Length: 380
Image (cartoon, rainbow, N blue to C red; front, side, top):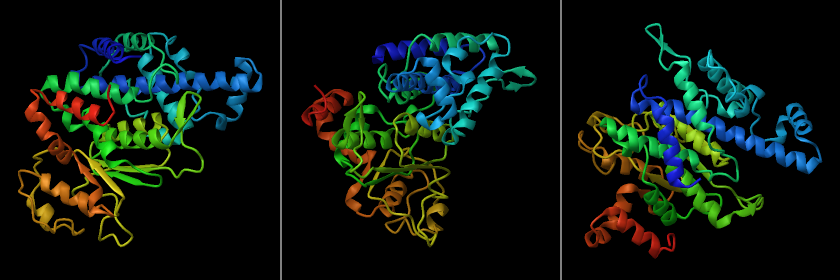
Protein backbone atom coordinates (compact mmCIF):
# COMPACT_ATOMS: atom_id res chain seq x y z
CA UNK A 1 0.00 0.00 0.00
CA UNK A 2 1.55 3.32 -1.03
CA UNK A 3 1.27 6.48 1.06
CA UNK A 4 -1.50 8.11 -0.98
CA UNK A 5 -3.62 4.95 -0.78
CA UNK A 6 -3.03 4.75 2.98
CA UNK A 7 -4.04 8.37 3.51
CA UNK A 8 -7.17 8.05 1.37
CA UNK A 9 -8.12 4.91 3.31
CA UNK A 10 -7.62 6.62 6.68
CA UNK A 11 -9.52 9.70 5.52
CA UNK A 12 -12.48 7.51 4.58
CA UNK A 13 -12.22 5.77 7.96
CA UNK A 14 -12.26 9.12 9.76
CA UNK A 15 -15.22 10.32 7.71
CA UNK A 16 -17.19 7.26 8.83
CA UNK A 17 -16.95 8.57 12.42
CA UNK A 18 -17.86 12.19 11.72
CA UNK A 19 -20.69 13.38 13.91
CA UNK A 20 -20.51 11.59 17.25
CA UNK A 21 -16.72 11.88 17.74
CA UNK A 22 -14.53 14.99 17.86
CA UNK A 23 -11.81 14.88 15.20
CA UNK A 24 -8.82 14.51 17.62
CA UNK A 25 -10.50 11.35 18.99
CA UNK A 26 -10.77 9.59 15.61
CA UNK A 27 -7.44 7.83 16.21
CA UNK A 28 -8.72 6.25 19.45
CA UNK A 29 -11.25 4.21 17.47
CA UNK A 30 -9.40 3.74 14.18
CA UNK A 31 -5.93 2.68 15.37
CA UNK A 32 -6.95 -0.25 17.62
CA UNK A 33 -8.99 -1.69 14.74
CA UNK A 34 -6.16 -1.13 12.24
CA UNK A 35 -3.89 -2.93 14.71
CA UNK A 36 -6.40 -5.78 15.10
CA UNK A 37 -6.71 -6.08 11.33
CA UNK A 38 -2.93 -6.19 10.93
CA UNK A 39 -2.66 -8.92 13.58
CA UNK A 40 -5.50 -10.87 12.00
CA UNK A 41 -4.14 -10.63 8.47
CA UNK A 42 -0.65 -11.67 9.63
CA UNK A 43 -2.26 -14.55 11.54
CA UNK A 44 -3.91 -15.66 8.28
CA UNK A 45 -0.50 -15.48 6.56
CA UNK A 46 0.95 -17.70 9.28
CA UNK A 47 -1.91 -20.18 8.90
CA UNK A 48 -1.12 -20.37 5.19
CA UNK A 49 2.59 -20.88 5.89
CA UNK A 50 1.90 -23.66 8.40
CA UNK A 51 -0.53 -25.39 6.05
CA UNK A 52 2.16 -25.48 3.34
CA UNK A 53 4.94 -26.58 5.71
CA UNK A 54 2.87 -29.41 7.23
CA UNK A 55 0.98 -30.39 4.09
CA UNK A 56 -2.39 -29.57 5.71
CA UNK A 57 -5.42 -27.82 4.31
CA UNK A 58 -6.42 -24.54 5.99
CA UNK A 59 -8.89 -26.06 8.48
CA UNK A 60 -6.37 -28.70 9.54
CA UNK A 61 -3.76 -25.99 10.06
CA UNK A 62 -6.22 -23.94 12.13
CA UNK A 63 -7.01 -26.93 14.33
CA UNK A 64 -3.29 -27.48 14.87
CA UNK A 65 -2.86 -23.79 15.85
CA UNK A 66 -5.89 -23.89 18.14
CA UNK A 67 -4.20 -26.72 20.03
CA UNK A 68 -0.71 -25.18 20.04
CA UNK A 69 -0.71 -21.36 20.13
CA UNK A 70 3.09 -21.29 20.08
CA UNK A 71 2.99 -22.06 16.36
CA UNK A 72 2.13 -18.41 15.73
CA UNK A 73 3.48 -15.20 17.21
CA UNK A 74 0.06 -13.92 18.31
CA UNK A 75 -2.91 -16.22 18.58
CA UNK A 76 -6.10 -14.54 17.35
CA UNK A 77 -9.32 -16.14 18.66
CA UNK A 78 -11.92 -16.97 16.03
CA UNK A 79 -14.31 -14.21 17.05
CA UNK A 80 -11.53 -11.62 16.73
CA UNK A 81 -10.36 -12.66 13.26
CA UNK A 82 -11.22 -10.05 10.68
CA UNK A 83 -13.31 -12.44 8.64
CA UNK A 84 -15.60 -12.74 11.66
CA UNK A 85 -15.44 -9.01 12.47
CA UNK A 86 -16.60 -7.88 9.05
CA UNK A 87 -19.60 -10.25 9.20
CA UNK A 88 -20.84 -9.04 12.60
CA UNK A 89 -24.45 -7.77 12.60
CA UNK A 90 -25.13 -4.10 13.12
CA UNK A 91 -26.98 -4.56 16.40
CA UNK A 92 -24.59 -5.01 19.30
CA UNK A 93 -21.51 -4.26 17.18
CA UNK A 94 -19.87 -1.99 19.77
CA UNK A 95 -19.94 -4.67 22.45
CA UNK A 96 -18.80 -7.32 19.95
CA UNK A 97 -15.75 -5.23 18.98
CA UNK A 98 -14.88 -4.65 22.63
CA UNK A 99 -15.23 -8.37 23.31
CA UNK A 100 -12.98 -9.13 20.33
CA UNK A 101 -10.06 -6.91 21.38
CA UNK A 102 -10.37 -8.12 24.98
CA UNK A 103 -10.24 -11.73 23.77
CA UNK A 104 -7.02 -10.99 21.89
CA UNK A 105 -5.54 -9.37 25.01
CA UNK A 106 -6.47 -12.40 27.15
CA UNK A 107 -4.79 -14.80 24.74
CA UNK A 108 -1.71 -12.58 24.36
CA UNK A 109 -0.68 -11.01 27.69
CA UNK A 110 1.84 -8.78 25.95
CA UNK A 111 -1.08 -6.96 24.31
CA UNK A 112 -2.98 -6.26 27.53
CA UNK A 113 -3.44 -2.53 27.99
CA UNK A 114 -2.47 -2.04 24.35
CA UNK A 115 -5.08 -3.39 21.97
CA UNK A 116 -7.93 -3.24 24.49
CA UNK A 117 -7.69 0.43 25.51
CA UNK A 118 -10.88 1.50 23.71
CA UNK A 119 -14.40 0.57 24.81
CA UNK A 120 -16.37 0.61 21.57
CA UNK A 121 -19.59 0.29 23.57
CA UNK A 122 -18.92 3.22 25.93
CA UNK A 123 -21.72 5.57 26.92
CA UNK A 124 -22.01 9.07 28.32
CA UNK A 125 -25.14 10.48 29.94
CA UNK A 126 -26.83 7.18 29.10
CA UNK A 127 -26.12 7.49 25.36
CA UNK A 128 -23.65 5.58 23.21
CA UNK A 129 -20.62 7.70 22.31
CA UNK A 130 -20.29 5.97 18.92
CA UNK A 131 -23.51 4.28 17.77
CA UNK A 132 -23.29 0.91 16.05
CA UNK A 133 -24.11 2.27 12.59
CA UNK A 134 -20.97 4.46 12.66
CA UNK A 135 -18.83 1.53 13.82
CA UNK A 136 -20.31 -0.61 11.05
CA UNK A 137 -19.26 1.96 8.45
CA UNK A 138 -15.76 2.07 9.97
CA UNK A 139 -15.39 -1.72 9.83
CA UNK A 140 -16.50 -1.78 6.20
CA UNK A 141 -13.96 0.91 5.25
CA UNK A 142 -11.12 -0.88 7.06
CA UNK A 143 -12.06 -4.12 5.29
CA UNK A 144 -11.13 -2.65 1.89
CA UNK A 145 -7.39 -3.30 2.22
CA UNK A 146 -5.41 -6.28 3.40
CA UNK A 147 -2.59 -5.64 5.91
CA UNK A 148 -0.66 -8.91 5.74
CA UNK A 149 3.10 -9.46 5.68
CA UNK A 150 3.41 -8.97 1.91
CA UNK A 151 0.71 -6.29 1.65
CA UNK A 152 2.15 -3.44 3.72
CA UNK A 153 5.36 -2.40 5.44
CA UNK A 154 5.54 -3.01 9.20
CA UNK A 155 5.49 0.77 9.69
CA UNK A 156 1.83 0.90 8.58
CA UNK A 157 0.64 1.69 12.10
CA UNK A 158 3.18 4.45 12.69
CA UNK A 159 2.31 6.04 9.37
CA UNK A 160 -1.39 5.84 10.23
CA UNK A 161 -0.81 7.43 13.63
CA UNK A 162 1.19 10.28 12.14
CA UNK A 163 -1.40 10.95 9.45
CA UNK A 164 -4.32 11.04 11.88
CA UNK A 165 -2.47 13.38 14.21
CA UNK A 166 -1.32 15.67 11.43
CA UNK A 167 -4.72 15.81 9.79
CA UNK A 168 -7.00 16.10 12.79
CA UNK A 169 -5.03 17.14 15.90
CA UNK A 170 -3.50 20.17 14.22
CA UNK A 171 -6.86 21.00 12.63
CA UNK A 172 -8.27 21.26 16.14
CA UNK A 173 -5.53 23.65 17.27
CA UNK A 174 -3.26 21.04 18.85
CA UNK A 175 0.33 20.36 17.84
CA UNK A 176 1.00 16.99 16.24
CA UNK A 177 4.68 17.61 16.96
CA UNK A 178 3.91 16.93 20.62
CA UNK A 179 3.33 13.27 19.74
CA UNK A 180 5.65 12.38 16.86
CA UNK A 181 8.72 13.49 14.96
CA UNK A 182 8.55 13.89 11.15
CA UNK A 183 9.67 10.69 9.47
CA UNK A 184 12.65 12.15 7.60
CA UNK A 185 14.04 13.73 10.78
CA UNK A 186 13.71 10.43 12.66
CA UNK A 187 15.50 8.54 9.88
CA UNK A 188 18.33 11.08 9.90
CA UNK A 189 18.73 10.84 13.69
CA UNK A 190 18.84 7.02 13.52
CA UNK A 191 21.54 7.11 10.84
CA UNK A 192 23.63 9.53 12.87
CA UNK A 193 23.48 7.31 15.97
CA UNK A 194 23.99 3.99 14.10
CA UNK A 195 23.08 1.46 16.86
CA UNK A 196 25.34 -1.58 16.97
CA UNK A 197 24.65 -5.12 18.30
CA UNK A 198 23.88 -5.13 22.01
CA UNK A 199 23.23 -1.38 22.18
CA UNK A 200 20.68 -0.05 24.67
CA UNK A 201 18.71 2.90 23.22
CA UNK A 202 16.58 5.15 25.43
CA UNK A 203 13.92 7.78 24.68
CA UNK A 204 12.80 9.60 27.85
CA UNK A 205 9.75 11.19 26.20
CA UNK A 206 8.98 8.63 23.53
CA UNK A 207 5.48 9.63 22.36
CA UNK A 208 4.34 7.01 19.87
CA UNK A 209 7.79 5.38 19.84
CA UNK A 210 8.71 6.45 16.32
CA UNK A 211 12.32 7.38 17.14
CA UNK A 212 12.98 4.12 18.97
CA UNK A 213 11.48 2.16 16.07
CA UNK A 214 13.57 4.03 13.50
CA UNK A 215 16.74 3.43 15.51
CA UNK A 216 15.90 -0.28 15.65
CA UNK A 217 15.07 -0.44 11.94
CA UNK A 218 18.42 1.17 11.12
CA UNK A 219 20.15 -1.51 13.20
CA UNK A 220 18.12 -4.23 11.43
CA UNK A 221 18.94 -2.73 8.03
CA UNK A 222 22.65 -3.08 8.77
CA UNK A 223 22.69 -6.44 10.55
CA UNK A 224 19.52 -8.28 9.51
CA UNK A 225 19.07 -11.01 6.90
CA UNK A 226 16.14 -11.46 4.51
CA UNK A 227 13.84 -14.31 5.61
CA UNK A 228 10.34 -14.82 4.19
CA UNK A 229 10.38 -11.32 2.64
CA UNK A 230 11.32 -9.67 5.95
CA UNK A 231 14.57 -8.71 7.64
CA UNK A 232 15.36 -10.95 10.62
CA UNK A 233 18.27 -10.77 13.02
CA UNK A 234 20.70 -13.73 12.79
CA UNK A 235 20.96 -15.77 15.99
CA UNK A 236 24.64 -14.87 16.41
CA UNK A 237 23.98 -11.10 16.50
CA UNK A 238 23.08 -9.49 19.83
CA UNK A 239 19.77 -7.64 19.66
CA UNK A 240 19.32 -3.94 20.32
CA UNK A 241 17.28 -3.15 23.44
CA UNK A 242 14.93 -0.16 23.43
CA UNK A 243 13.65 1.69 26.50
CA UNK A 244 11.10 4.47 26.66
CA UNK A 245 8.80 6.43 28.94
CA UNK A 246 5.87 8.74 28.25
CA UNK A 247 3.26 10.47 30.38
CA UNK A 248 0.44 10.09 27.84
CA UNK A 249 -1.58 6.87 28.20
CA UNK A 250 -2.73 6.91 24.58
CA UNK A 251 0.85 7.35 23.34
CA UNK A 252 1.99 4.58 25.71
CA UNK A 253 -0.42 2.14 24.08
CA UNK A 254 0.72 3.31 20.65
CA UNK A 255 4.38 2.64 21.52
CA UNK A 256 3.54 -0.96 22.35
CA UNK A 257 1.56 -1.34 19.11
CA UNK A 258 4.61 -0.02 17.24
CA UNK A 259 6.95 -2.35 19.13
CA UNK A 260 4.75 -5.39 18.47
CA UNK A 261 4.14 -4.68 14.81
CA UNK A 262 7.89 -4.25 14.19
CA UNK A 263 8.80 -7.50 16.00
CA UNK A 264 10.98 -5.70 18.55
CA UNK A 265 11.47 -8.34 21.23
CA UNK A 266 13.79 -6.43 23.61
CA UNK A 267 11.57 -3.48 24.59
CA UNK A 268 10.80 -1.94 27.97
CA UNK A 269 8.26 0.89 27.92
CA UNK A 270 6.98 2.68 31.03
CA UNK A 271 4.04 5.00 31.61
CA UNK A 272 4.72 8.05 33.76
CA UNK A 273 6.16 11.56 34.15
CA UNK A 274 9.84 11.31 33.25
CA UNK A 275 10.82 14.68 34.66
CA UNK A 276 9.13 14.20 38.04
CA UNK A 277 9.23 10.39 38.38
CA UNK A 278 11.75 8.80 35.99
CA UNK A 279 11.04 5.08 35.62
CA UNK A 280 14.61 4.03 34.86
CA UNK A 281 16.86 4.41 37.91
CA UNK A 282 19.84 2.44 39.18
CA UNK A 283 19.76 -0.06 42.02
CA UNK A 284 20.38 2.64 44.63
CA UNK A 285 17.31 4.57 43.49
CA UNK A 286 19.29 7.82 43.76
CA UNK A 287 20.67 8.07 40.20
CA UNK A 288 19.36 7.40 36.73
CA UNK A 289 20.04 4.14 34.93
CA UNK A 290 22.51 4.75 32.12
CA UNK A 291 22.14 3.72 28.48
CA UNK A 292 24.42 3.54 25.45
CA UNK A 293 22.37 5.96 23.35
CA UNK A 294 19.61 8.50 23.90
CA UNK A 295 17.34 9.69 21.09
CA UNK A 296 14.50 12.11 21.83
CA UNK A 297 12.23 14.93 20.68
CA UNK A 298 11.06 16.70 23.85
CA UNK A 299 8.23 19.21 23.69
CA UNK A 300 9.93 22.56 23.24
CA UNK A 301 9.36 25.41 25.73
CA UNK A 302 7.47 23.13 28.12
CA UNK A 303 6.41 24.72 31.42
CA UNK A 304 7.89 22.87 34.41
CA UNK A 305 8.16 24.56 37.85
CA UNK A 306 11.73 25.33 38.94
CA UNK A 307 11.25 23.41 42.21
CA UNK A 308 11.17 20.19 40.16
CA UNK A 309 14.79 20.89 39.19
CA UNK A 310 15.87 22.41 42.51
CA UNK A 311 14.65 19.43 44.58
CA UNK A 312 15.59 16.69 42.13
CA UNK A 313 16.65 13.54 44.04
CA UNK A 314 18.59 12.13 41.07
CA UNK A 315 21.22 14.89 40.70
CA UNK A 316 20.32 15.53 37.07
CA UNK A 317 20.63 19.31 36.88
CA UNK A 318 24.20 20.09 37.87
CA UNK A 319 24.66 22.38 34.86
CA UNK A 320 22.03 24.91 35.91
CA UNK A 321 18.33 25.20 36.67
CA UNK A 322 16.24 25.83 33.54
CA UNK A 323 13.65 28.62 33.58
CA UNK A 324 10.09 27.58 34.46
CA UNK A 325 8.92 28.69 31.00
CA UNK A 326 11.19 26.35 29.01
CA UNK A 327 12.30 22.83 29.94
CA UNK A 328 14.64 22.41 26.95
CA UNK A 329 17.83 22.63 29.05
CA UNK A 330 16.26 20.36 31.65
CA UNK A 331 15.57 17.64 29.08
CA UNK A 332 19.10 17.85 27.69
CA UNK A 333 20.54 17.45 31.19
CA UNK A 334 18.24 14.48 31.83
CA UNK A 335 19.55 12.87 28.62
CA UNK A 336 23.17 13.50 29.61
CA UNK A 337 22.53 11.97 33.04
CA UNK A 338 21.08 8.89 31.31
CA UNK A 339 24.14 8.21 29.16
CA UNK A 340 27.15 5.96 29.56
CA UNK A 341 28.97 8.21 27.06
CA UNK A 342 27.86 11.83 26.65
CA UNK A 343 28.77 11.75 22.95
CA UNK A 344 25.93 9.35 22.12
CA UNK A 345 22.98 11.70 22.67
CA UNK A 346 20.79 12.87 19.80
CA UNK A 347 18.08 15.30 20.87
CA UNK A 348 16.05 16.77 18.03
CA UNK A 349 17.54 20.19 18.79
CA UNK A 350 20.96 18.91 17.63
CA UNK A 351 19.52 17.43 14.45
CA UNK A 352 17.93 20.80 13.69
CA UNK A 353 21.27 22.56 14.20
CA UNK A 354 22.88 20.16 11.73
CA UNK A 355 20.39 21.31 9.11
CA UNK A 356 20.64 25.07 9.72
CA UNK A 357 23.18 25.80 6.99
CA UNK A 358 21.12 23.88 4.46
CA UNK A 359 17.98 25.75 5.53
CA UNK A 360 19.64 29.03 4.68
CA UNK A 361 20.04 27.82 1.09
CA UNK A 362 16.56 26.34 0.77
CA UNK A 363 13.21 28.01 1.07
CA UNK A 364 11.68 25.14 3.02
CA UNK A 365 13.04 22.85 5.73
CA UNK A 366 11.76 19.68 4.07
CA UNK A 367 13.80 20.41 0.94
CA UNK A 368 16.86 20.80 3.16
CA UNK A 369 16.15 17.46 4.79
CA UNK A 370 15.83 15.80 1.39
CA UNK A 371 19.22 17.17 0.39
CA UNK A 372 20.88 15.88 3.55
CA UNK A 373 19.33 12.45 3.10
CA UNK A 374 20.43 12.30 -0.54
CA UNK A 375 23.96 13.19 0.55
CA UNK A 376 23.88 10.29 2.97
CA UNK A 377 22.60 7.98 0.25
CA UNK A 378 19.26 7.51 2.00
CA UNK A 379 17.04 8.99 -0.70
CA UNK A 380 17.12 8.82 -4.49
